[in-house]
Length: 367
Ligand SMILES: O=C(O)CCC(=O)C(=O)O
View (cartoon, rainbow, N blue to C red):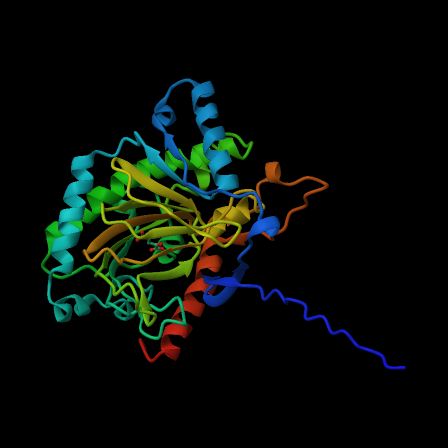
């Protein structure tokens, strides 16, 4: 008697992942989910008219806050329109940004970020490399400047100890107009950002003024970015590698070129194309932490494959450097206990900067 063995070849499903930069390092990953495995997630970015943020009726501010909170919980990204920042101011800031980048690289290198202890100033093309799979790094150059209290529309009274926690900017010499234009933009954005924080507080079920005392001298920064076009088929560089922002939230102005993508829960890249008259707002790691993960800090990236020069200006916003930040009590319950210990902003940033500087020194950049 003979016997036959039947071998069945089972199709093994190899999971596919999207990798991204998180907490100072590349390597966090999200599985790409399709078919029956796919989760319910977003496929577009909502646009919210925020004119109600200036309403003197609490119920209108609350209804806006709820709309914003829904976007923060489901997407972590949304556009804001009717935000109150004059288009002429934005255009003037974009013009001065383009003039700054048009200078020769050796002139801009005089304010290289590694000449500043807080990594403020100019970073050349390929100076950053978030995605370690791209050997050249990020195909972008940038200029980063921070909050200066004298430029705040509500100038705060600070002790010497509080002043010592602030970052120092590295301004180009002999370009007073550039600095003046940077400050004019920052000033207007600080006013809007404080309103946004009140809206986030309401949306998280807290008092509208819950965050007010923590944002009297907020840690804000503006990064002016120029993305030269990249070869669409290149795998050796990208515009900015996939990452989350580590601040509370970001308000991004982008020109009309496009290239920003946002990652949904299924590991699918959703475009965030330019929409005239809007800023793109996204939640960062620190507000996600403060909300006990209720609000999402969403992964995003830029690839400028348009063949044109792209310019953008993210405005990053965080609490005062000496603020001691706890998870909001309204975001915790017996069934959903607090996930994070309180931390001061200065400590949170110190840890992050340490990792960032170490990473760049490993690549032989900096001192
Ligand atoms: O330029 C953009 O559109 C996004 C910039 C960004 O994600 C960043 O600087 O963190």
